[in-house]
Length: 80
Image 1 (cartoon, rainbow, N blue to C red):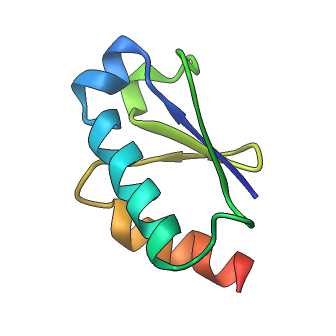
Image 2 (image 1 turned 45 degrees about the vertical axis):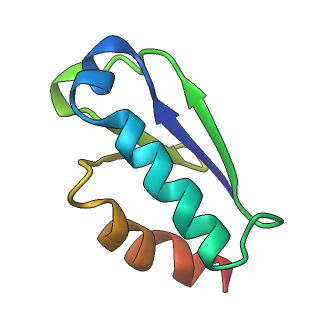
C-alpha cells in the first residue's frame, strides 16, 4: 500500500509535517514497514482541502488531529 502526503507550501502550513511524523510512528508501531510505503509529493492541486493524502490513488483530506483515526479506520483494516 502506498500513502502519499502532500508537502507543498499550503499543506505544510496546515500540518503535513506532523501528519508525516504521525504516520511514520503508526506504521512502525504496528509493524507495517513491509506493507506500507510512505512518500511525499508537492502540490496535489487540492489546496483548499489540504492536507491532501492519497492511499493507492484515493484522495483524503487530513489534519494532525484526524490522522490517528484515519490510520485506524482506513489503513489498518486494509493491511491486516
